Length: 320
Image (cartoon, rainbow, N blue to C red; front, side, top):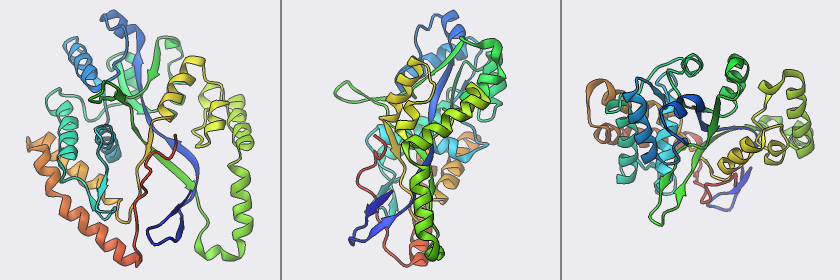
């Protein structure tokens, strides 16, 4: 993926190889028993379904503190759905001082503090027993695991897109954060760069990625699906018609979260702020805002260390 920097220099970040994103898994049999005809499509509907499930003695899996990125990704997804962005001032500062970010973070925290959603759980076991009939998880990792983990439940579960946020015009924003794994050539490999780029170009071709993905399924069965970043190859994998339709809709709404120098620090402080709100009853917005300067200082330190001006892409939806 190559993008022009602010000074006109071509900056090559990497060639996308794999990508991951979350979808919402649900137990069809349990929702039907409770009179819930369809899975929630917006966060408002999600709240109502959550209340019904909790009243019936069930739990909902939205994300765990075992992985700090779980809480962060739900928060950033809501932020983008509301029309916000992760960075401001040309990508040099975090946006967490803005009201839209604070509102999104508070909304996420309240699922755990007010609705009492669990912060740690065994996703596969609790989804299998039915204790957790709705679960937000990675579309490939959990699908592959559960396909062979609970064969007795075949046909009794499914997945759909993550809930969206209703816009003023009545449409639903289904933006979801996508994580990309890229292939890169190290700067010190100057004498091998042509061979390396030839291999990268070959490996990421539609035909090669499709062949690899389908051979995995042929060898491993339905649980061998591969999270290719090649959209054409994805469409050629053996999904059912309904699954392919849902995943295509989600693909069209994926948002690439920009990586900036020092960005690794964000999930740490988002998780710290969340834990203060969850464990100690602190204000989510106050806690998040309290880490803004700390995050900005780390980003500034990394820019100085790397001795170049970085920029933020203007087109976030790089996968549509």
